[in-house]
Length: 345
Image: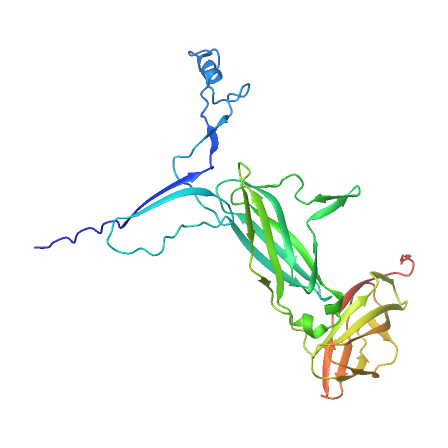
């Protein structure tokens, strides 16, 4: 004969009453045309209902506020007031009482490392609650090594207009994208070895309001990116024309950086011609010693023998100390046009 084990009795009696959290009273309008059997009866009842809006009785939202029948949800970052009564019905000591808090927003980030030490951050923010949010502020607080520029507005008639325009509300389950550009401060930009290893970028500060103006605020933890791997020597373009004339020399400016934090390099520059790009100057010339985390700018001249969009390739840097060669192809692209077409500077 089997005996069912006794049911476990509840150890705690918990009563929660949430304060100052009313909602707009909703009414289901019932109406008909005057030629129907009820005539104007339904419309008259709605006009006499004190919860409806005068002159807009068919709207579901009324002018009154109502207290909810249940506690509702508690969202992270929002302020709420409540009265909690806990009574221990057992003979055991209760140490901790947990209140479940839900996450109101889902935040996803993507980083893009530019060749000029700039970092672009794309933040995707999704409203995962059941009610719309008014997005009051979404800003990025950078780390001490960076300055930040928000790319979420455009200039129109001399004024900055948000790319979202008047659509400040984020509907339930909708996602909005924000873009930021981080540039290293001058005192850190000159130290290539330091910027190369920086992974902490900053944190997002998000402020919103819900239906009745309740404010919520969240700050993310420090956002981290994958540090770009430039190797020992980094070559970047400082200046290049967008359009050049066919078979006419044009100039570019390259920046060479020793990314090593310990070793001095002795560099030799070689320029290799391609089918369309021809370098003007002496190949195999000595650039001299380049100390750790330092840079030098180099002006180079070249011309193109083929029209169209051409890729600049064929630069080689050799470190004579280690006998190691670094190859740089597809550095940039330039549009080559016929000399009969005037190219504006």
